Length: 357
Ligand code: DAH
Image (cartoon, rainbow, N blue to C red; front, side, top):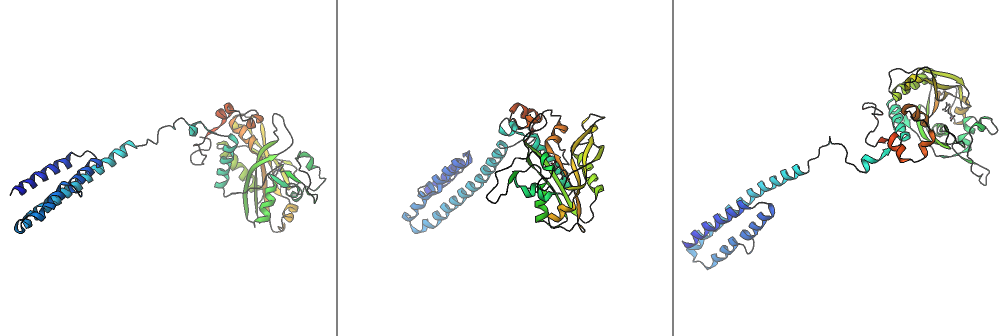
């Protein structure tokens, strides 16, 4: 009978040790000290063999009952400790996503106004169903000029202040592209109409003063199908300007001009009301209907296909929208300027959420 009392005591001792365990580590220690190979319950088990057969049966059953009871207590206390640990972790890892960004690279860094304006324009044109096309900065003379209906010796070449590379052994010259218009050629050579693309990117001209830098940015647009006309062109330009300047109305005029790759050609002016300066006109780019020669140069039948193109200066759009006076500062890598005119990297422009927020 002495063994039975032992067992009761052992059980209640173990149960209170289990209840007192404050964390999973302490509980595991109790488990090992009770049920482990050299634990206290296992030690009692080992005594079974030395007992007479008739006692062995009842004592064995009693030890097993203790073992079961202790195991159950371990399991249920383990569940309680685990959920308490989870609660504690959730509470300590809580994040308030409405808090401002902590000081550090993410809050310090700024997106350059040119990159931001490119993102704004990409968002606006994507909404109108335009895809983004790209071409290389180092372009062939053929794509930059000849296929755009600007043959050798054409006076329009002069206006471009081109950076030329040395001719290769075949006499072919590469250039730093002077405009994004060669992306029109690349697109028409590689895609079948209907075509609807924009091509933002860097362009280069040997020119430098307050409003000119040797490298600057343009965005090109090209739409080709069987029935697109100047009315569509004007609508796209107007919608783009309203969305870009974030105004309900924008005054616009197309002023007759000349570009070899369009016929008719026009210069795009907008009323300076859009930037809060009424009474003036601002030139933002050139446009027109794609010249039949350009279509033919790209293997398209001008009897069947037609469309429009336009090109605008991105830097100029950024200067107008954000009131930035000097173009040269765009490329002088002055951190104070960037802190002032740059955008937080978390302010991704969207039409729904606001472009310049
Ligand atoms: N490529 C011209 C320039 O850089 C701008 C331009 C004018 C682009 C008319 C066009 C266009 O697509 O139709 O001066």
